[in-house]
Amino acid sequence: MTEKNFILKNLDTTNLEKGSFTWKSPSNIALIKYWGKSEPQIPKNTSISFTLNNCYTTTILEFSKKENLSKEFSIKVFFEGKTKDGFKPKIVKFFERIEKYVPFITKYDFVIKTENSFPHSSGIASSASGMSALALCLMSIEKELNSDITDEYFNKKSSFLARLGSGSAARSIEGELVVWGNHKKIPESSDLYGTKFPYDVHDNFKNYQDTILLVDKGEKQVSSTIGHNLMIDHPFAKKRFKQADNNISKLSEILQNGNLSAFVNLVESEALTLHAMMMTSNPYFILMKPNTLKIIEKIWKYRGDNKSDICFTLDAGANVHVLFPEREKEKINTFITNELIAFCQNNQYICDNVGSGARQL
Ligand code: PMV
Image 1 (cartoon, rainbow, N blue to C red):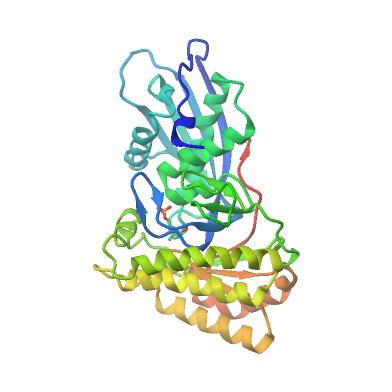
Image 2 (cartoon, rainbow, N blue to C red):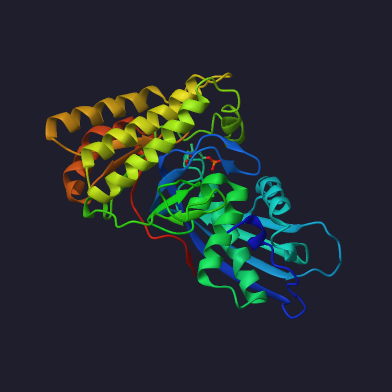
């Protein structure tokens, strides 16, 4: 599919006066990281993520026909029941980017009521779940205006729109493993939207666990926009994009053959490479905190002592995602409670597992 497939002409809004749609959309954690993009939100390399089950955004989008014919967007935002004007500039920017594909958005007054299942400012990026939930609500309006839309088109266009709000949001429509970015070994993969990992996944990866240790709940030190831009003149950028491309091929094999030690090695290497890119850019950043390193050392020791397949991954921040197979759940939960929670801010952590994607409520 190309960008043109997402522009539907002549959608008639005459008979749709008002309504409301609600979607619950998940966050995701990348195993092969997306870091570096070109306009408009086209990734420099393919990424792949686990969809999360317990970290999600629920968004209600209420809409009613505007009384005036102004072309300005009319948006009111509520976050956890309270007006949140602070979210508006990002949403207006999102609407500006997607207007070409959903032109009906100038015709309605919108009220957006949104909340997250995870604590605000927990350092868990809400842009993936938030932008995908909003994109899905808008697609529900489009479907109301054109009932011929297939489920496949609905999902692809939701991901396409979500991507224009936040790149990683493209991977938050479906589950459980989602690929975003064109790759020769992944049929149907696209730079424009996320697609489900197309091969049978080994049982070792069924219901994979992800416990998120909240090491630092502060505001993001580097915004995604600044972060991705750091890759533009980065001395190692070309090598990194090539490496990510190879890593996708490797991970695709691993997910099919169930080789957990290869998985552990690849996933940790990806996490550290993401941080290495930040440390070697200019300006440079260290996003890990002392406790991030302490947790990593503990994980490595536990893995050695217990012949375990526990591993970690990181986002663009200090929090640690502890990944492990379901069969190790009980033992690793004890280890986490006894030895890792002490390194979390206010002892806060979130037990999660791989989930199946967004749902309309
Ligand atoms: O979606 P963005 O633009 O916030 O970028 C997210 C980038 C990482 O979370 C660091 C990696 C990824 O692939 O999710």
